[in-house]
Length: 490
Image 1: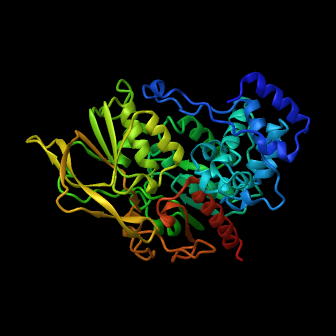
Image 2: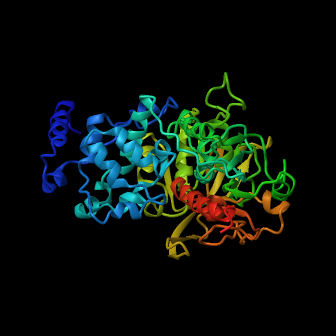
Image 3: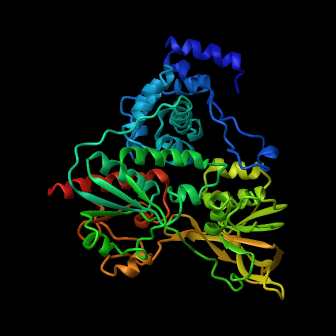
């Protein structure tokens, strides 16, 4: 990493636009400053510390301003990436924020948790020219910097709301898809009511992503923009239990409904002993920490979770989040157990790297056979079976094949299952006329995202299964566009 003085000199030259494209290609990627691993495992503060202004200017100046804008093609909400990046390169952060805000209400969130390496940055010309995707322009880091810089100045852009249409719309859930849908529906002039089952808005952004990756004050700030637009947010309202979809439309007079209730039903290990004390789904474990503050026993809304040796099953971002949370809750040893090899890990490369830096162990090519416990019903360990990789499955990854006779007992006192989530069946149970697939996901029209019930639309994880924040937002915007046309009688 360049020294502060060197960055000053480079940034000053870049402001004068005196670098040729060839010289821009030679500018090194700006690394994100982070807390030291030995420090951060003892706090819940954000790991990534963010760019300085000069770092942001230098990183933005690596962009070549391609005429065909391949990065935009990789963005589900179609942010004008070259447009906002060029503003950053010139030091115009307000201009950059204005460009982003035309397409996204959540830049501070997306800049932190979206897998840009599989989306916008995957198509970056700079990365392709370096023949290394990790050398792409740090679009996500720049988006985060712009959002944070504007927040520090107390500057925000609240989208304008059109004249009232007289239409009333319900939005079920308050996660990324619902936030995007609610914003676009409200901008069109409809009265929008958002219903959240939990006591805080934000959905998975609040209960699923740890504080050290996404501070909750940022989520609260972004949700606050909806309220400033005039969106009514009602918490502790579980659609399907407090009130059904049918009742919302027929009794409460909603003209249309968007369902963005997510995929919050955890998948369990499916082995004997998973009901023992000390076995958690990642959803429960993370919710206890993120939403109920189990890391702060004096102010927690849940009993503290005390563990020594923790096994986390799974290889995605949720598994990394659970493992790194366990360390911060005081576990002396945390092991991620994954039934495939390291090459098949679906988690972000950055998250895997942070987990390793913090001391998380990885046990690859192993699968659970049985969770064992003592006479008090508490976990004592897990019997694991070695696997080898066979033929590719439907996702293209090679399937794990158990090796007979390879079973071995491993001592753990806490087991966390982070192997995915399914759709909550409550709405389907109380609204049988809505069509779902065998996984419980809503079946929708691919273009409009309308469900089998006229006037009811859906998007995000309830349709896609577990997806990314930005993909969910893209579906929220897609559905809102179709809903606006539906409400106008087109």
